[in-house]
Image 1 (tube, rainbow, N blue to C red):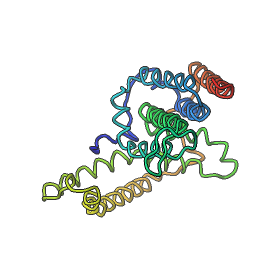
Image 2 (cartoon, rainbow, N blue to C red; image 1 turned 180 degrees about the vertical axis):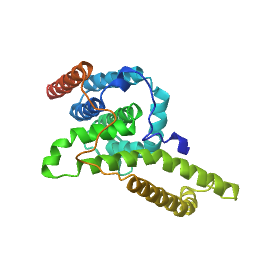
Image 3 (cartoon, rainbow, N blue to C red; image 1 turned 180 degrees about the horizontal axis):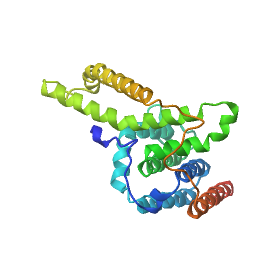
Image 4 (cartoon, one colour; image 1 turned 90 degrees about the vertical axis):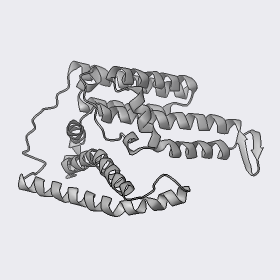
Length: 268
């Protein structure tokens, strides 16, 4: 897997209807989608959620290729989850391999869990791909603003989340540069066993951590020099306002989420 395949935190600019939605609307839709995924239990509900996801990807014009490319880093986690559900779900045994048993219930559990994880990741990718980090920060801060009455550092939390997302592509690019420099000096990261390749990556950590701390320090100094402060009294270049399309999408998403819950309860 190449480092360029890691697309978490990237933003693909566009002028599609999904791009133009208020960031708070997209965050709420993502939460509705996650809740609906955990309420779904049968093929029909999963099929409806898959159609909703496919429609979102098509409308956003992000491209299936970008979504699939972002899935590569989590392939190992998905495989391990599938195997655990396949072999350790109790039920009617179909195949026995030593002390491991494959059951009919295990096959269904592994299938549904794999589909759930992949659709969940794709849905969250769609949020970050169509929302810039600045708007995402403003949306999170606006949604969490009621917690300010409890003296929670809402602005600081939103800013930290935004900076973390923004730094992921930067750190990936820095890692790729360090790897290229060490390959030019004879380092080998692609041959040998899995353990040997893991050990070969250890020399990357020291320069990567130094670079990350340097960037963090430069960002902190730049913010202090500009007298940055969050919270009360801070103005915004773009004021967030719900439009009719936002309210319509929020209501539609809430109704669909409730419908998926009802369908799952009645075994549909």
